[in-house]
Length: 309
Image (cartoon, rainbow, N blue to C red; front, top):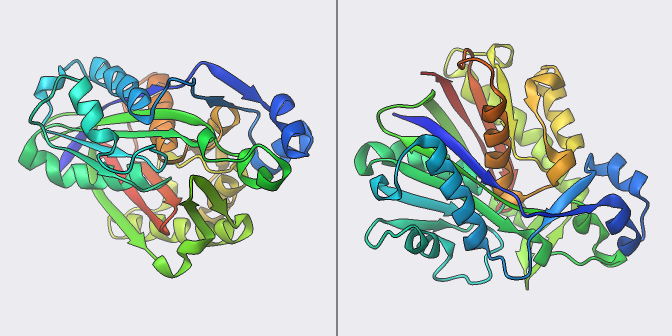
């Protein structure tokens, strides 16, 4: 058992709105908004890397937690868009933080990777000490801004998020998690030859079926229902998908924290960016359960339950 102590995030400065992007992909700004719920997304600068974005989010998280990097017991870094496969960004971020012996592991899973990392951190923190979880992506380099790449180009943006999982204290206690994988359908969502391929309809169908089931199963084994949850923090994939998940759980949409309109789909970073914004907006101590959920390439999906500490 461990606790969520803090979140952090970093978003590149460059904003790319639908008026800039839509003409490049043969669409209108209104159509992009209607099919995705996205108004703008952020793009990394030319000299940015997945590691540099992740480092900025890590530093923000550590500052929010009030601890030094040297107090960390482990880093877990999720990314599906790192330029180099091995070594991945985890060791680069650790080195930039001044860590020379702290284990730093990569989780190369797009979209669902940060959820997987949070679940692993819950198990690892009691053994290693505080675990810094980072999701960092530069998906703008994995899309084609042309009519042929329209279905993915309109969705993806860049950014990084982080969470500190502490074995002893935090504002929320991680109570349970549920993770799943179905490789038989992996071809519908993949990154290959530096490009994202996505069969959008199939992905939405799979996610709509799997995410609500994972959430309800997780809650049921903890004697809870969706109505008991104070906030749902989901991977910000597509507004239409979030709306479907809310309907499937029979929970009002206003129980879901949503920021996709401003940042687009930042893959494995999106869950933690959303969590950081949500936590920063709290006006009072946490009083109800939190559910995190994500779905992505693999196919990997799952949910995580956190309770007020």
